[in-house]
Length: 90
Picture 1 (cartoon, rainbow, N blue to C red):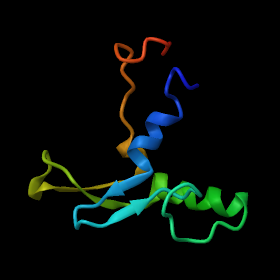
Picture 2: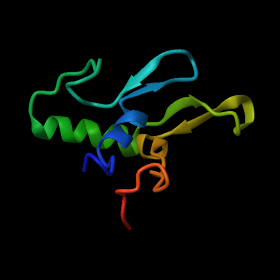
Picture 3: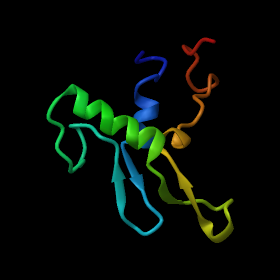
Picture 4: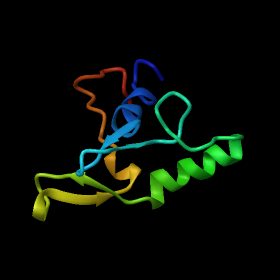
């Protein structure tokens, strides 16, 4: 997992999200500034699922009209380039 960046690359794009208004949104985790209570695994997973698939965040987007677009966490994920990480396989 380490050489392929399968955990670290998604973390880079979703851990702390810079919002268009200058604020931040945080993926539910105990290793960042996420401010809501994570009392158990079920609570964390429900919050994580909401962040990744239902919550819509206003993020700066040079390609969008007005320079802002609404995105969920999963839409912030980017492909991992095999040219940069050759350990990555299909």
